[in-house]
Image (cartoon, rainbow, N blue to C red; front, side, top):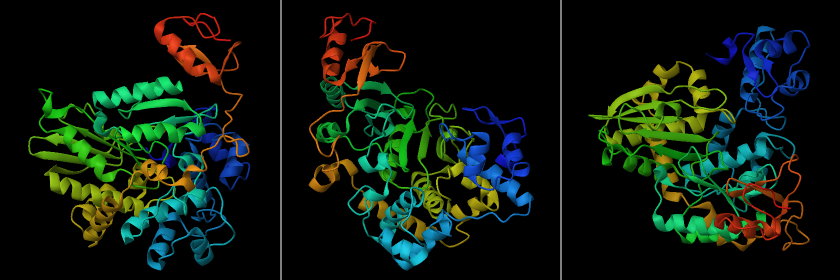
Length: 465
């Protein structure tokens, strides 16, 4: 069901229990005309923010019903939408934010437009042969914290480290490295839904040290922090499973290596299932690939999250070469046309003509742009570089990884931890006794041995003072 068709009693913001009818009333009865006013009036979208796309759609539909023209401007600094700005920069060849805002906007930019422009330049850099790293010297300053330091900031101010594991594959030797790094830095380990191992609790100044060891072990950035390809999920396929009809793992690895680092309007997730039993949940992904006895069925425009959507069938029984060709075209067209932070599901739903028209463009090449889209993707593949590997070789980029500018060797004294299920987690307000950061690694080591803590307290389910 599209956002505009949500019944009034549908919950839009689950954090604050705000209904669609309340959102509509904020426009029709209280005169709200901007997203900020709707948030202030209803409290929707003020906690986790996952409902903001739905709020925006509801707001725009109500404004249109009221006869008010809805602006597609990206922000106050650019009167153009993201897709319009993409085409302007593509044709104009601007290479910096200053050049772009001078040519097409005004002012000095904001937290909305700067990351979008950085993403545009990264995408267009791969299409033109220019290499624009979204975290490099030129574009890094435009990014928010996560992209700027290539790690997701957590609620206590520490960061996550999530290396890429294509299709969930990892060697025993690499697992040993992950385990030793986690022990040495006292990191919290958790398997995530992307078939990867996440390590949590790293300080900002520790990130380069950790990543140098991971890169030496053959790991790359998993881009868990970026609006880019996150992962390609896979079942074991015909290699191991008696039901598998195609080698889904090898296909997933090939797709992840092809699209790794691809910057886009929103995060991208891909799934590859080796048979119709669908163990990789491919139809819940932006791109879903399901094996058949004749080849692969390709689905597009799915996602989980706050607004789940099943991917729609684009074409059936593709061979390997044509599967990759269609995915190339789909992803590059999405990058070219989508609005800022718009998932593929919403883009497919909103695109004129729906899945049928998209099929004509992607499969039948009705617009004659297929080769151009493929060339853009080929350029991306040819110019890819691992962001953390490049950063470790660049003293200027490394200079930003300090907890305190005036005291780079000092750790945050406010970080505190408590043991839970054999690992150390951030302390909460309800935890009466906490462990300061310097003893975390030693406490974790004691936990693994079932011993007492470095401070003499029991660590078997009890808090460390």
